[in-house]
Length: 287
Ligand SMILES: Nc1nc2ncc(COP(=O)(O)OP(=O)(O)O)nc2c(=O)[nH]1
Image (cartoon, rainbow, N blue to C red; front, side, top):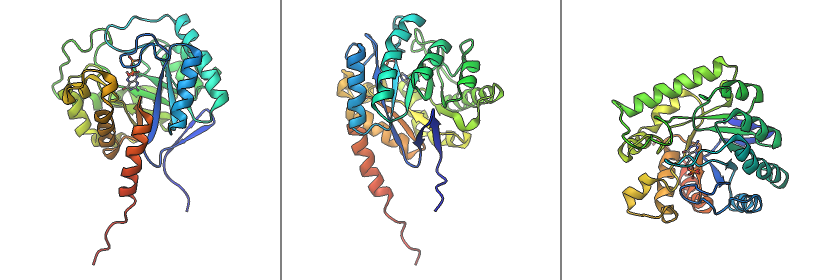
């Protein structure tokens, strides 16, 4: 039977989206909110990436600049120094698609040249030169919603209708990307949990995420260890938010997300196995 399920060609490495896929986070940063400094050397980051693949990650997201509010901006040179060697080594030592978490066109180009097959842009290609770079590179691109800028986005997030406003933003960014020559089959959307949103906004978006399936492209969900999970569970430390993160990502998967961006790959993979077992139960025969 011909398989018609969607897939992404990530620089020759195919990511099938016949079921929710787990994107393991590799932060090569000293200051990421939940694991800053844990993997901020090339060797440590590569070892962490290989560990996440061993735990079942279907792809990896390598980032060299923290996006948390108040994080120190990183120069192009420093970001290149952080991510390129990690991408090169992981491209040689694993077969899964590699994504680069950056909004800088220069980093996009160098990362793809080093072996990345996907661009993950929290600014949805709004930085100068980003649309053109992504169009030239021809790899899948994650377009994420953010209200404001990382430094101040969490001060007073406000929406008249968060679902409608995020939906309109993503539809507009998809249009801009297609006008720049990026094929729709290479687009992924992301509601941007925690990027200019209160916990109420995040939970409303999670509850209504099926609304975004109509945009006709894969949806990525990234709630892992975030502040909203902490607020709802009372878990102060991000590393203690695994169960809440897994629950949130399962709900996201059930409501249309097919890429789950997580720190805790093994726990997420286990949860998806239970979900898949239930999902495989045939529908009751109509009497
Ligand atoms: N597409 C996408 N990319 C993202 N990049 C970073 C973070 C923040 O998480 P993390 O990378 O763990 O922290 P930091 O930005 O502090 O490195 N969240 C997302 C997200 O939700 N979606």
